[in-house]
Length: 307
Length: 284
Image 1 (cartoon, rainbow over the protein chains, first blue to last red):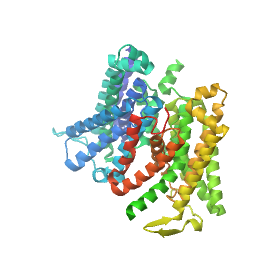
Image 2 (image 1 turned 90 degrees about the horizontal axis):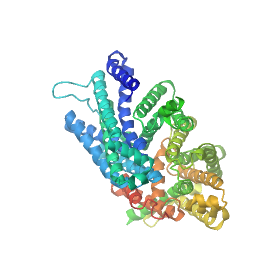
Image 3 (image 1 turned 60 degrees about the vertical axis):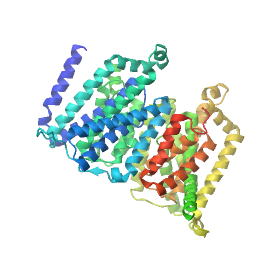
Image 4 (image 1 turned 60 degrees about the horizontal axis):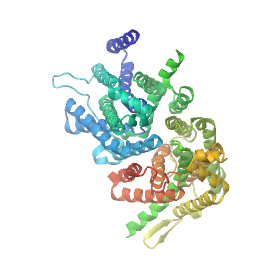
Protein backbone atom coordinates (compact mmCIF):
# COMPACT_ATOMS: atom_id res chain seq x y z
CA UNK A 1 0.00 0.00 0.00
CA UNK A 2 1.45 3.34 -0.98
CA UNK A 3 1.50 6.34 1.35
CA UNK A 4 -0.93 8.27 -0.77
CA UNK A 5 -3.37 5.39 -0.64
CA UNK A 6 -3.02 5.01 3.10
CA UNK A 7 -3.63 8.71 3.68
CA UNK A 8 -6.66 8.69 1.39
CA UNK A 9 -8.10 5.68 3.22
CA UNK A 10 -7.46 7.27 6.63
CA UNK A 11 -9.11 10.50 5.49
CA UNK A 12 -12.14 8.57 4.22
CA UNK A 13 -12.41 6.65 7.48
CA UNK A 14 -12.10 9.84 9.54
CA UNK A 15 -14.80 11.47 7.44
CA UNK A 16 -17.09 8.46 7.75
CA UNK A 17 -16.68 8.39 11.52
CA UNK A 18 -16.60 12.12 12.20
CA UNK A 19 -19.11 13.63 9.79
CA UNK A 20 -22.43 11.82 10.56
CA UNK A 21 -23.37 13.80 13.74
CA UNK A 22 -23.27 17.02 11.71
CA UNK A 23 -25.32 15.78 8.77
CA UNK A 24 -28.99 16.71 8.27
CA UNK A 25 -31.34 13.75 8.90
CA UNK A 26 -32.08 13.03 5.23
CA UNK A 27 -28.41 13.02 4.26
CA UNK A 28 -27.69 10.65 7.13
CA UNK A 29 -30.31 8.11 6.00
CA UNK A 30 -28.94 8.29 2.47
CA UNK A 31 -25.44 7.64 3.78
CA UNK A 32 -26.71 4.65 5.77
CA UNK A 33 -28.36 3.28 2.64
CA UNK A 34 -25.16 3.75 0.70
CA UNK A 35 -23.12 1.83 3.30
CA UNK A 36 -25.53 -1.10 3.25
CA UNK A 37 -25.70 -1.23 -0.56
CA UNK A 38 -21.93 -0.87 -0.67
CA UNK A 39 -21.63 -4.11 1.33
CA UNK A 40 -24.04 -5.76 -1.08
CA UNK A 41 -22.19 -4.51 -4.17
CA UNK A 42 -18.78 -5.51 -2.77
CA UNK A 43 -20.10 -9.01 -2.07
CA UNK A 44 -21.19 -9.32 -5.69
CA UNK A 45 -17.86 -8.00 -6.89
CA UNK A 46 -16.05 -10.86 -5.18
CA UNK A 47 -17.83 -13.07 -7.72
CA UNK A 48 -18.06 -10.74 -10.69
CA UNK A 49 -14.85 -8.74 -10.54
CA UNK A 50 -12.46 -11.12 -8.84
CA UNK A 51 -13.70 -14.55 -9.93
CA UNK A 52 -15.26 -13.57 -13.26
CA UNK A 53 -18.70 -15.03 -12.51
CA UNK A 54 -21.61 -12.71 -13.32
CA UNK A 55 -24.53 -13.69 -11.09
CA UNK A 56 -28.05 -12.62 -12.03
CA UNK A 57 -29.54 -13.89 -8.78
CA UNK A 58 -27.44 -12.27 -6.12
CA UNK A 59 -30.45 -10.60 -4.49
CA UNK A 60 -31.48 -14.09 -3.31
CA UNK A 61 -28.97 -14.10 -0.43
CA UNK A 62 -29.67 -10.46 0.40
CA UNK A 63 -33.38 -11.20 0.48
CA UNK A 64 -33.15 -14.48 2.39
CA UNK A 65 -31.14 -12.81 5.16
CA UNK A 66 -33.59 -9.89 5.22
CA UNK A 67 -36.54 -12.27 5.55
CA UNK A 68 -34.83 -14.23 8.33
CA UNK A 69 -34.35 -11.01 10.30
CA UNK A 70 -37.93 -9.93 9.54
CA UNK A 71 -39.50 -13.21 10.63
CA UNK A 72 -37.32 -13.66 13.70
CA UNK A 73 -37.83 -10.13 15.02
CA UNK A 74 -41.55 -9.79 14.32
CA UNK A 75 -42.65 -13.29 15.29
CA UNK A 76 -40.08 -14.49 17.79
CA UNK A 77 -38.66 -11.25 19.23
CA UNK A 78 -35.20 -12.73 18.77
CA UNK A 79 -32.11 -10.80 19.84
CA UNK A 80 -29.85 -8.91 17.46
CA UNK A 81 -27.06 -11.48 17.62
CA UNK A 82 -29.44 -14.39 17.13
CA UNK A 83 -31.01 -12.68 14.11
CA UNK A 84 -27.70 -11.73 12.59
CA UNK A 85 -26.27 -15.22 13.12
CA UNK A 86 -29.32 -16.93 11.67
CA UNK A 87 -29.46 -14.52 8.73
CA UNK A 88 -25.80 -15.10 7.83
CA UNK A 89 -26.23 -18.84 8.25
CA UNK A 90 -29.32 -18.87 6.02
CA UNK A 91 -27.57 -16.82 3.33
CA UNK A 92 -24.53 -19.15 3.46
CA UNK A 93 -26.73 -22.23 3.33
CA UNK A 94 -28.64 -20.91 0.34
CA UNK A 95 -25.40 -20.02 -1.42
CA UNK A 96 -23.97 -23.45 -0.61
CA UNK A 97 -26.97 -25.20 -2.17
CA UNK A 98 -27.25 -22.84 -5.15
CA UNK A 99 -23.51 -22.99 -5.71
CA UNK A 100 -23.68 -26.76 -6.15
CA UNK A 101 -26.18 -26.21 -8.95
CA UNK A 102 -24.60 -23.15 -10.56
CA UNK A 103 -20.82 -23.44 -10.40
CA UNK A 104 -20.49 -26.01 -13.17
CA UNK A 105 -21.91 -23.57 -15.70
CA UNK A 106 -19.87 -20.82 -17.32
CA UNK A 107 -20.50 -17.60 -19.21
CA UNK A 108 -24.02 -16.97 -20.34
CA UNK A 109 -25.24 -20.27 -18.85
CA UNK A 110 -24.04 -19.13 -15.43
CA UNK A 111 -26.12 -16.00 -15.93
CA UNK A 112 -29.16 -18.07 -16.84
CA UNK A 113 -28.84 -20.52 -13.98
CA UNK A 114 -28.34 -17.83 -11.35
CA UNK A 115 -31.31 -16.02 -12.88
CA UNK A 116 -33.35 -19.19 -12.43
CA UNK A 117 -32.20 -19.69 -8.82
CA UNK A 118 -32.99 -16.07 -8.03
CA UNK A 119 -36.48 -16.60 -9.45
CA UNK A 120 -36.99 -19.72 -7.34
CA UNK A 121 -36.24 -17.67 -4.24
CA UNK A 122 -38.36 -14.75 -5.37
CA UNK A 123 -41.23 -17.12 -6.19
CA UNK A 124 -41.12 -18.55 -2.68
CA UNK A 125 -41.12 -15.09 -1.09
CA UNK A 126 -43.99 -14.03 -3.34
CA UNK A 127 -46.22 -17.08 -2.97
CA UNK A 128 -45.40 -18.68 0.38
CA UNK A 129 -47.82 -16.29 2.01
CA UNK A 130 -48.12 -18.07 5.36
CA UNK A 131 -44.40 -17.58 5.94
CA UNK A 132 -43.56 -14.37 4.10
CA UNK A 133 -46.93 -12.51 3.89
CA UNK A 134 -46.47 -12.60 0.11
CA UNK A 135 -46.60 -9.39 -1.83
CA UNK A 136 -47.62 -7.39 1.25
CA UNK A 137 -44.25 -8.01 2.80
CA UNK A 138 -43.35 -8.02 6.48
CA UNK A 139 -43.39 -4.67 8.23
CA UNK A 140 -42.67 -3.50 11.75
CA UNK A 141 -39.13 -4.80 12.04
CA UNK A 142 -37.73 -2.99 15.07
CA UNK A 143 -34.19 -1.63 14.99
CA UNK A 144 -31.91 -3.76 17.14
CA UNK A 145 -30.78 -3.11 20.69
CA UNK A 146 -28.18 -5.02 22.67
CA UNK A 147 -28.76 -6.70 26.02
CA UNK A 148 -26.32 -4.19 27.53
CA UNK A 149 -28.98 -1.55 26.92
CA UNK A 150 -27.36 -0.02 23.85
CA UNK A 151 -30.12 0.80 21.38
CA UNK A 152 -29.70 1.38 17.65
CA UNK A 153 -33.23 2.64 17.18
CA UNK A 154 -32.30 6.23 16.39
CA UNK A 155 -30.78 7.10 13.00
CA UNK A 156 -27.33 8.11 14.26
CA UNK A 157 -26.54 5.01 16.34
CA UNK A 158 -27.93 2.84 13.55
CA UNK A 159 -25.74 4.63 11.07
CA UNK A 160 -22.69 3.80 13.16
CA UNK A 161 -23.82 0.17 13.37
CA UNK A 162 -24.01 0.13 9.56
CA UNK A 163 -20.61 1.76 9.40
CA UNK A 164 -19.16 -0.98 11.60
CA UNK A 165 -20.74 -3.63 9.40
CA UNK A 166 -19.37 -1.88 6.31
CA UNK A 167 -15.86 -1.54 7.72
CA UNK A 168 -15.81 -5.19 8.80
CA UNK A 169 -17.00 -6.27 5.34
CA UNK A 170 -14.49 -3.99 3.60
CA UNK A 171 -11.65 -5.19 5.83
CA UNK A 172 -12.45 -8.88 5.49
CA UNK A 173 -12.96 -8.63 1.74
CA UNK A 174 -9.66 -6.75 1.37
CA UNK A 175 -7.93 -9.57 3.24
CA UNK A 176 -9.70 -12.19 1.13
CA UNK A 177 -8.84 -10.68 -2.24
CA UNK A 178 -5.19 -10.15 -1.25
CA UNK A 179 -4.79 -13.62 0.23
CA UNK A 180 -3.37 -16.49 -1.83
CA UNK A 181 -6.95 -17.67 -2.19
CA UNK A 182 -8.02 -14.31 -3.60
CA UNK A 183 -5.09 -14.23 -6.00
CA UNK A 184 -6.02 -17.71 -7.20
CA UNK A 185 -9.55 -16.44 -7.85
CA UNK A 186 -8.13 -13.69 -10.03
CA UNK A 187 -6.03 -16.29 -11.80
CA UNK A 188 -9.18 -18.28 -12.51
CA UNK A 189 -10.84 -15.15 -13.84
CA UNK A 190 -7.95 -14.57 -16.26
CA UNK A 191 -7.28 -18.10 -17.49
CA UNK A 192 -9.23 -20.88 -15.91
CA UNK A 193 -7.54 -23.56 -17.99
CA UNK A 194 -4.04 -22.58 -16.91
CA UNK A 195 -5.02 -22.56 -13.23
CA UNK A 196 -6.46 -26.02 -13.69
CA UNK A 197 -3.28 -27.18 -15.38
CA UNK A 198 -1.27 -25.78 -12.46
CA UNK A 199 -3.20 -28.10 -10.17
CA UNK A 200 -5.64 -25.67 -8.57
CA UNK A 201 -9.05 -27.03 -7.68
CA UNK A 202 -10.94 -24.48 -9.76
CA UNK A 203 -14.37 -25.78 -8.81
CA UNK A 204 -13.64 -25.56 -5.08
CA UNK A 205 -12.20 -22.04 -5.39
CA UNK A 206 -15.28 -20.86 -7.23
CA UNK A 207 -17.56 -22.64 -4.79
CA UNK A 208 -15.94 -21.06 -1.74
CA UNK A 209 -16.03 -17.64 -3.41
CA UNK A 210 -19.72 -18.19 -4.19
CA UNK A 211 -20.52 -18.96 -0.53
CA UNK A 212 -18.41 -16.09 0.82
CA UNK A 213 -20.10 -13.75 -1.60
CA UNK A 214 -23.50 -15.00 -0.44
CA UNK A 215 -22.50 -14.48 3.20
CA UNK A 216 -21.57 -10.82 2.69
CA UNK A 217 -24.75 -10.28 0.68
CA UNK A 218 -26.56 -11.76 3.68
CA UNK A 219 -24.89 -9.25 5.99
CA UNK A 220 -26.12 -6.45 3.76
CA UNK A 221 -29.62 -7.97 3.64
CA UNK A 222 -29.85 -8.28 7.42
CA UNK A 223 -28.78 -4.65 7.85
CA UNK A 224 -31.28 -3.58 5.19
CA UNK A 225 -34.16 -5.31 7.00
CA UNK A 226 -33.27 -3.40 10.17
CA UNK A 227 -32.74 -0.15 8.29
CA UNK A 228 -35.96 -0.22 6.31
CA UNK A 229 -38.13 -1.97 8.91
CA UNK A 230 -39.88 -3.64 5.98
CA UNK A 231 -39.10 -6.59 3.72
CA UNK A 232 -40.97 -7.59 0.55
CA UNK A 233 -40.32 -9.77 -2.51
CA UNK A 234 -38.90 -6.68 -4.24
CA UNK A 235 -35.71 -7.26 -2.24
CA UNK A 236 -35.21 -10.58 -4.06
CA UNK A 237 -36.44 -9.50 -7.48
CA UNK A 238 -34.37 -9.75 -10.64
CA UNK A 239 -34.42 -5.95 -10.84
CA UNK A 240 -32.56 -5.74 -7.52
CA UNK A 241 -29.97 -8.28 -8.68
CA UNK A 242 -29.38 -6.37 -11.90
CA UNK A 243 -29.21 -3.06 -10.08
CA UNK A 244 -26.40 -4.44 -7.95
CA UNK A 245 -24.63 -5.59 -11.09
CA UNK A 246 -24.98 -2.03 -12.36
CA UNK A 247 -23.41 -0.66 -9.17
CA UNK A 248 -20.40 -2.92 -9.64
CA UNK A 249 -20.14 -2.26 -13.37
CA UNK A 250 -20.50 1.48 -12.86
CA UNK A 251 -17.92 1.68 -10.09
CA UNK A 252 -15.38 -0.69 -11.57
CA UNK A 253 -15.35 -4.47 -11.24
CA UNK A 254 -12.31 -6.11 -9.70
CA UNK A 255 -11.77 -3.38 -7.11
CA UNK A 256 -13.41 -2.90 -3.72
CA UNK A 257 -13.57 0.87 -3.96
CA UNK A 258 -15.43 0.64 -7.27
CA UNK A 259 -18.59 -1.08 -5.95
CA UNK A 260 -18.69 1.38 -3.03
CA UNK A 261 -18.57 4.30 -5.44
CA UNK A 262 -21.14 2.64 -7.70
CA UNK A 263 -23.48 1.99 -4.77
CA UNK A 264 -23.08 5.61 -3.69
CA UNK A 265 -23.86 7.00 -7.12
CA UNK A 266 -26.88 4.77 -7.74
CA UNK A 267 -28.41 5.22 -4.26
CA UNK A 268 -28.01 9.01 -4.44
CA UNK A 269 -29.25 9.04 -7.99
CA UNK A 270 -32.41 7.04 -7.28
CA UNK A 271 -33.30 8.94 -4.13
CA UNK A 272 -32.59 12.46 -5.32
CA UNK A 273 -34.00 11.94 -8.78
CA UNK A 274 -37.29 10.61 -7.45
CA UNK A 275 -37.69 13.86 -5.52
CA UNK A 276 -37.35 16.04 -8.58
CA UNK A 277 -38.98 14.03 -11.33
CA UNK A 278 -41.56 11.31 -11.83
CA UNK A 279 -39.53 10.03 -14.75
CA UNK A 280 -36.66 8.71 -12.66
CA UNK A 281 -37.16 5.17 -13.93
CA UNK A 282 -36.67 6.35 -17.49
CA UNK A 283 -33.52 8.19 -16.50
CA UNK A 284 -32.24 5.20 -14.54
CA UNK A 285 -32.76 3.11 -17.67
CA UNK A 286 -30.73 5.63 -19.65
CA UNK A 287 -28.01 5.41 -16.99
CA UNK A 288 -27.78 1.66 -17.58
CA UNK A 289 -27.41 2.23 -21.31
CA UNK A 290 -25.03 5.16 -20.81
CA UNK A 291 -22.72 3.24 -18.48
CA UNK A 292 -22.32 0.45 -21.00
CA UNK A 293 -21.77 2.80 -23.93
CA UNK A 294 -19.61 5.43 -22.23
CA UNK A 295 -17.82 3.82 -19.29
CA UNK A 296 -17.48 0.08 -19.94
CA UNK A 297 -14.71 -0.19 -17.33
CA UNK A 298 -16.49 1.79 -14.65
CA UNK A 299 -15.48 4.91 -12.76
CA UNK A 300 -12.31 3.38 -11.33
CA UNK A 301 -11.29 2.10 -14.76
CA UNK A 302 -11.92 5.52 -16.32
CA UNK A 303 -9.83 7.27 -13.63
CA UNK A 304 -6.99 4.81 -14.08
CA UNK A 305 -7.20 5.20 -17.85
CA UNK A 306 -6.97 8.99 -17.53
CA UNK A 307 -3.73 8.87 -15.54
CA UNK B 1 -62.90 -34.75 -13.82
CA UNK B 2 -64.35 -31.33 -14.56
CA UNK B 3 -61.52 -29.76 -12.58
CA UNK B 4 -58.83 -31.61 -14.52
CA UNK B 5 -60.36 -30.89 -17.93
CA UNK B 6 -60.90 -27.21 -17.19
CA UNK B 7 -57.41 -26.77 -15.78
CA UNK B 8 -55.90 -28.67 -18.70
CA UNK B 9 -57.75 -26.50 -21.22
CA UNK B 10 -56.75 -23.32 -19.40
CA UNK B 11 -53.18 -24.56 -19.14
CA UNK B 12 -52.94 -25.35 -22.83
CA UNK B 13 -54.38 -22.00 -23.89
CA UNK B 14 -52.03 -20.19 -21.49
CA UNK B 15 -49.21 -22.28 -22.89
CA UNK B 16 -50.21 -21.14 -26.39
CA UNK B 17 -49.70 -17.53 -25.35
CA UNK B 18 -46.39 -18.48 -23.75
CA UNK B 19 -45.36 -20.09 -27.02
CA UNK B 20 -45.70 -16.75 -28.80
CA UNK B 21 -43.70 -15.10 -26.01
CA UNK B 22 -41.03 -17.78 -25.75
CA UNK B 23 -40.40 -18.68 -29.38
CA UNK B 24 -38.88 -15.25 -30.05
CA UNK B 25 -36.65 -15.35 -26.98
CA UNK B 26 -35.47 -18.83 -27.88
CA UNK B 27 -34.55 -17.84 -31.44
CA UNK B 28 -32.73 -14.73 -30.23
CA UNK B 29 -30.82 -16.70 -27.62
CA UNK B 30 -29.99 -19.42 -30.10
CA UNK B 31 -28.50 -17.03 -32.63
CA UNK B 32 -26.95 -14.37 -30.39
CA UNK B 33 -26.48 -16.07 -26.95
CA UNK B 34 -27.96 -12.97 -25.40
CA UNK B 35 -29.98 -12.82 -22.17
CA UNK B 36 -32.56 -10.25 -23.22
CA UNK B 37 -34.27 -8.76 -20.17
CA UNK B 38 -36.30 -6.45 -22.42
CA UNK B 39 -38.21 -9.37 -23.95
CA UNK B 40 -41.13 -8.92 -21.55
CA UNK B 41 -41.23 -5.25 -22.53
CA UNK B 42 -41.93 -6.22 -26.16
CA UNK B 43 -44.93 -8.18 -24.91
CA UNK B 44 -46.12 -5.17 -22.90
CA UNK B 45 -45.56 -2.62 -25.66
CA UNK B 46 -47.24 -4.88 -28.20
CA UNK B 47 -50.27 -5.06 -25.93
CA UNK B 48 -50.39 -1.29 -25.51
CA UNK B 49 -50.03 -0.53 -29.22
CA UNK B 50 -52.72 -3.11 -29.98
CA UNK B 51 -54.97 -1.49 -27.40
CA UNK B 52 -54.61 1.95 -28.95
CA UNK B 53 -55.14 0.56 -32.44
CA UNK B 54 -58.38 -1.14 -31.44
CA UNK B 55 -59.70 1.95 -29.70
CA UNK B 56 -58.92 4.10 -32.76
CA UNK B 57 -59.86 1.76 -35.62
CA UNK B 58 -62.04 -0.92 -33.97
CA UNK B 59 -60.08 -3.46 -36.00
CA UNK B 60 -58.64 -6.43 -34.13
CA UNK B 61 -56.55 -7.83 -37.05
CA UNK B 62 -55.04 -4.38 -37.51
CA UNK B 63 -54.17 -4.33 -33.80
CA UNK B 64 -52.32 -7.63 -34.13
CA UNK B 65 -50.40 -6.31 -37.11
CA UNK B 66 -49.58 -2.84 -35.82
CA UNK B 67 -48.57 -4.06 -32.35
CA UNK B 68 -46.25 -6.74 -33.70
CA UNK B 69 -44.74 -4.64 -36.49
CA UNK B 70 -44.06 -1.50 -34.47
CA UNK B 71 -42.34 -3.46 -31.73
CA UNK B 72 -40.34 -5.42 -34.33
CA UNK B 73 -38.99 -2.06 -35.52
CA UNK B 74 -38.06 -1.15 -31.94
CA UNK B 75 -36.25 -4.46 -31.59
CA UNK B 76 -34.44 -3.91 -34.86
CA UNK B 77 -33.28 -0.49 -33.71
CA UNK B 78 -32.08 -1.87 -30.38
CA UNK B 79 -30.06 -4.57 -32.07
CA UNK B 80 -28.51 -2.44 -34.79
CA UNK B 81 -27.69 0.62 -32.71
CA UNK B 82 -26.86 -0.78 -29.30
CA UNK B 83 -26.52 -4.52 -28.93
CA UNK B 84 -24.44 -5.16 -32.04
CA UNK B 85 -21.33 -3.58 -30.54
CA UNK B 86 -21.61 -5.82 -27.47
CA UNK B 87 -21.45 -9.09 -29.38
CA UNK B 88 -20.72 -12.01 -27.00
CA UNK B 89 -20.18 -9.77 -23.94
CA UNK B 90 -22.87 -11.25 -21.77
CA UNK B 91 -22.79 -8.89 -18.78
CA UNK B 92 -22.87 -5.59 -20.71
CA UNK B 93 -25.68 -7.07 -22.82
CA UNK B 94 -27.70 -7.89 -19.71
CA UNK B 95 -27.25 -4.39 -18.30
CA UNK B 96 -28.06 -2.80 -21.64
CA UNK B 97 -31.28 -4.77 -22.07
CA UNK B 98 -32.23 -4.01 -18.46
CA UNK B 99 -31.77 -0.31 -19.24
CA UNK B 100 -34.11 -0.63 -22.20
CA UNK B 101 -36.63 -2.58 -20.10
CA UNK B 102 -36.74 0.28 -17.57
CA UNK B 103 -37.04 2.90 -20.33
CA UNK B 104 -39.90 0.98 -21.99
CA UNK B 105 -41.61 0.47 -18.64
CA UNK B 106 -41.56 4.17 -17.90
CA UNK B 107 -42.56 5.18 -21.42
CA UNK B 108 -45.49 2.78 -21.16
CA UNK B 109 -46.51 4.46 -17.92
CA UNK B 110 -46.06 7.90 -19.47
CA UNK B 111 -48.16 7.19 -22.56
CA UNK B 112 -50.79 4.75 -21.29
CA UNK B 113 -50.95 5.63 -17.60
CA UNK B 114 -51.10 3.29 -14.64
CA UNK B 115 -54.55 1.74 -15.14
CA UNK B 116 -55.03 -1.85 -16.26
CA UNK B 117 -56.82 -2.35 -19.58
CA UNK B 118 -58.31 -5.28 -21.39
CA UNK B 119 -58.34 -5.19 -25.14
CA UNK B 120 -61.85 -5.37 -26.62
CA UNK B 121 -61.91 -8.53 -28.73
CA UNK B 122 -64.34 -9.08 -31.62
CA UNK B 123 -67.79 -10.17 -30.47
CA UNK B 124 -67.62 -13.67 -31.97
CA UNK B 125 -64.44 -14.36 -29.99
CA UNK B 126 -65.91 -13.10 -26.74
CA UNK B 127 -68.47 -15.94 -26.64
CA UNK B 128 -68.19 -19.17 -24.79
CA UNK B 129 -69.97 -22.52 -24.82
CA UNK B 130 -70.47 -25.34 -22.37
CA UNK B 131 -68.84 -28.38 -23.96
CA UNK B 132 -69.67 -31.29 -21.68
CA UNK B 133 -68.15 -30.52 -18.30
CA UNK B 134 -65.86 -27.80 -19.62
CA UNK B 135 -66.66 -24.13 -20.06
CA UNK B 136 -64.94 -23.24 -23.34
CA UNK B 137 -64.13 -19.61 -24.05
CA UNK B 138 -63.73 -18.99 -27.77
CA UNK B 139 -60.94 -16.54 -27.16
CA UNK B 140 -58.82 -19.24 -25.55
CA UNK B 141 -59.43 -21.43 -28.61
CA UNK B 142 -58.41 -18.48 -30.76
CA UNK B 143 -55.11 -18.14 -28.87
CA UNK B 144 -54.41 -21.82 -29.41
CA UNK B 145 -55.20 -21.38 -33.12
CA UNK B 146 -52.90 -18.36 -33.44
CA UNK B 147 -50.06 -20.17 -31.69
CA UNK B 148 -50.61 -23.20 -33.90
CA UNK B 149 -50.56 -21.10 -37.07
CA UNK B 150 -47.46 -19.18 -35.98
CA UNK B 151 -45.76 -22.43 -35.04
CA UNK B 152 -46.44 -23.93 -38.49
CA UNK B 153 -45.28 -20.79 -40.31
CA UNK B 154 -42.12 -20.61 -38.19
CA UNK B 155 -41.40 -24.27 -38.77
CA UNK B 156 -41.81 -23.98 -42.54
CA UNK B 157 -39.71 -20.81 -42.53
CA UNK B 158 -36.90 -22.36 -40.49
CA UNK B 159 -36.87 -25.75 -42.18
CA UNK B 160 -37.86 -25.00 -45.77
CA UNK B 161 -36.41 -21.62 -46.73
CA UNK B 162 -32.91 -20.42 -47.36
CA UNK B 163 -33.19 -17.68 -44.73
CA UNK B 164 -34.37 -20.27 -42.23
CA UNK B 165 -31.41 -22.49 -43.08
CA UNK B 166 -29.08 -19.54 -42.45
CA UNK B 167 -30.67 -19.03 -39.05
CA UNK B 168 -30.31 -22.70 -38.17
CA UNK B 169 -26.70 -22.67 -39.28
CA UNK B 170 -26.01 -19.62 -37.12
CA UNK B 171 -27.66 -21.28 -34.13
CA UNK B 172 -25.44 -24.32 -34.58
CA UNK B 173 -22.18 -22.46 -35.07
CA UNK B 174 -22.06 -18.74 -35.75
CA UNK B 175 -18.37 -18.74 -36.67
CA UNK B 176 -18.68 -21.51 -39.22
CA UNK B 177 -21.82 -19.90 -40.60
CA UNK B 178 -19.90 -16.67 -41.12
CA UNK B 179 -17.11 -18.70 -42.68
CA UNK B 180 -19.32 -20.28 -45.33
CA UNK B 181 -20.63 -16.88 -46.37
CA UNK B 182 -23.75 -16.42 -44.27
CA UNK B 183 -24.22 -12.79 -43.32
CA UNK B 184 -24.38 -13.38 -39.56
CA UNK B 185 -24.94 -9.72 -38.57
CA UNK B 186 -27.91 -9.61 -40.95
CA UNK B 187 -29.26 -12.88 -39.55
CA UNK B 188 -28.87 -11.52 -36.01
CA UNK B 189 -30.72 -8.31 -36.83
CA UNK B 190 -33.49 -10.22 -38.59
CA UNK B 191 -33.88 -12.74 -35.79
CA UNK B 192 -33.91 -10.03 -33.16
CA UNK B 193 -36.68 -8.19 -35.00
CA UNK B 194 -38.55 -11.46 -35.47
CA UNK B 195 -38.22 -12.22 -31.75
CA UNK B 196 -39.64 -8.82 -30.83
CA UNK B 197 -42.41 -9.32 -33.42
CA UNK B 198 -43.45 -12.66 -31.91
CA UNK B 199 -43.38 -11.37 -28.32
CA UNK B 200 -45.44 -8.32 -29.28
CA UNK B 201 -47.93 -10.52 -31.14
CA UNK B 202 -48.23 -12.51 -27.93
CA UNK B 203 -48.75 -9.24 -26.10
CA UNK B 204 -51.66 -8.16 -28.32
CA UNK B 205 -53.26 -11.59 -28.05
CA UNK B 206 -52.61 -11.60 -24.31
CA UNK B 207 -54.12 -8.13 -23.89
CA UNK B 208 -57.55 -9.57 -24.70
CA UNK B 209 -57.01 -12.32 -22.14
CA UNK B 210 -54.81 -11.36 -19.18
CA UNK B 211 -55.00 -7.64 -19.98
CA UNK B 212 -52.22 -5.10 -20.19
CA UNK B 213 -50.96 -3.07 -17.21
CA UNK B 214 -47.73 -1.65 -15.76
CA UNK B 215 -45.54 -4.41 -14.38
CA UNK B 216 -46.80 -6.97 -16.89
CA UNK B 217 -43.39 -6.85 -18.58
CA UNK B 218 -41.51 -8.21 -15.59
CA UNK B 219 -44.36 -10.55 -14.76
CA UNK B 220 -44.15 -12.43 -18.07
CA UNK B 221 -40.35 -12.25 -18.42
CA UNK B 222 -39.70 -15.13 -15.98
CA UNK B 223 -42.24 -17.25 -17.87
CA UNK B 224 -40.44 -16.57 -21.12
CA UNK B 225 -37.18 -17.74 -19.57
CA UNK B 226 -38.74 -20.86 -18.06
CA UNK B 227 -40.29 -21.85 -21.39
CA UNK B 228 -37.06 -21.34 -23.26
CA UNK B 229 -34.84 -23.04 -20.71
CA UNK B 230 -37.08 -26.05 -20.18
CA UNK B 231 -37.53 -26.56 -23.90
CA UNK B 232 -34.01 -25.78 -24.98
CA UNK B 233 -32.31 -22.66 -26.20
CA UNK B 234 -32.75 -22.12 -29.90
CA UNK B 235 -35.00 -25.10 -30.56
CA UNK B 236 -38.53 -24.60 -31.95
CA UNK B 237 -39.90 -28.06 -30.96
CA UNK B 238 -38.38 -27.38 -27.54
CA UNK B 239 -40.38 -24.17 -27.20
CA UNK B 240 -43.59 -26.00 -28.11
CA UNK B 241 -43.02 -28.62 -25.44
CA UNK B 242 -41.70 -26.04 -22.96
CA UNK B 243 -44.65 -23.68 -23.31
CA UNK B 244 -47.22 -26.48 -22.99
CA UNK B 245 -45.43 -27.90 -19.95
CA UNK B 246 -45.12 -24.49 -18.31
CA UNK B 247 -48.72 -23.55 -19.10
CA UNK B 248 -50.00 -26.78 -17.54
CA UNK B 249 -47.56 -26.72 -14.63
CA UNK B 250 -48.50 -23.14 -13.86
CA UNK B 251 -52.24 -23.78 -13.93
CA UNK B 252 -52.15 -26.97 -11.91
CA UNK B 253 -49.53 -25.56 -9.57
CA UNK B 254 -51.65 -22.51 -8.79
CA UNK B 255 -54.76 -24.65 -8.30
CA UNK B 256 -53.18 -27.45 -6.27
CA UNK B 257 -50.33 -25.85 -4.29
CA UNK B 258 -50.89 -22.11 -4.42
CA UNK B 259 -48.12 -21.35 -1.92
CA UNK B 260 -45.49 -23.25 -3.87
CA UNK B 261 -46.76 -22.50 -7.36
CA UNK B 262 -43.79 -20.41 -8.49
CA UNK B 263 -41.46 -22.89 -6.86
CA UNK B 264 -42.98 -25.75 -8.88
CA UNK B 265 -42.36 -23.63 -11.97
CA UNK B 266 -38.87 -22.29 -11.40
CA UNK B 267 -37.25 -25.17 -9.51
CA UNK B 268 -37.51 -27.56 -12.51
CA UNK B 269 -35.96 -24.82 -14.62
CA UNK B 270 -32.96 -24.52 -12.30
CA UNK B 271 -32.58 -28.29 -12.16
CA UNK B 272 -32.76 -28.71 -15.93
CA UNK B 273 -30.16 -25.96 -16.32
CA UNK B 274 -27.89 -27.69 -13.85
CA UNK B 275 -28.22 -31.14 -15.38
CA UNK B 276 -28.55 -30.24 -19.05
CA UNK B 277 -27.73 -26.56 -19.56
CA UNK B 278 -29.03 -26.60 -23.11
CA UNK B 279 -32.53 -27.64 -22.06
CA UNK B 280 -34.49 -30.77 -22.88
CA UNK B 281 -34.25 -30.29 -26.64
CA UNK B 282 -31.15 -28.13 -27.07
CA UNK B 283 -28.33 -29.52 -29.12
CA UNK B 284 -25.24 -28.39 -27.26
